[in-house]
Image 1 (spheres, rainbow, N blue to C red):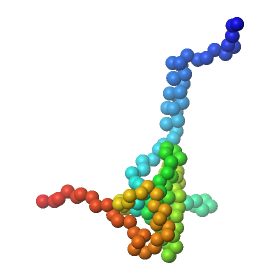
Image 2 (tube, helix red, strand yellow):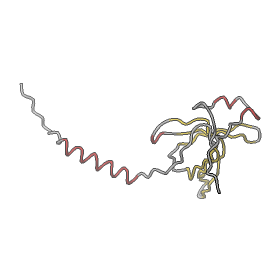
Image 3 (cartoon, rainbow, N blue to C red):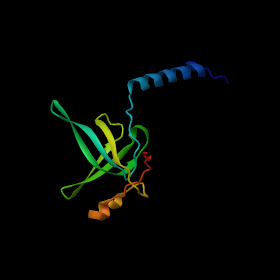
Image 4 (cartoon, helix red, strand yellow):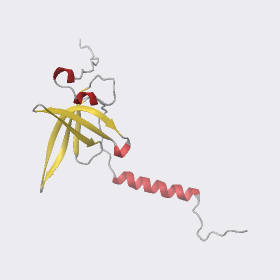
Amino acid sequence: MLIFNHFPLPLPSEKLRIMNAVNFVHEQLTTIPTVPTFKAGDNVTVNYKIVEGTKERIQSFKGDVIKRQGVGATASFTVRKISDGVGVERLFPVFSPNIDSITVNKVGRVRRAKLFFLRERSGKSARIKEKRRAVAKKD
């Protein structure tokens, strides 16, 4: 029994050429911002844009990263800070167009990827030790 295709399939080389063209256009249209490397336990400042009516301003959120999750375009991280004795957590998408900049203030020394235990702690027990870095000696 013979089966006839009414629509011939494109050649593999032509299919790859079309896919490469689509990827090229996608890369040109989407700009991926450079994000510093940080992990859970680091103290970061996230400057993000807030739109109020027609005005736009930048507000900073400084705190400790308690988790990073996801990969690629869906990656996000949670920052926790204490404001007037109340713990405040905010979740940020890593590649959000509303994030102006991320700066790493301190690199923390932790042994976990998710620091949810900090939610129950307060005062000195909620502190994260800073990772000591080697500094070149000046003569």
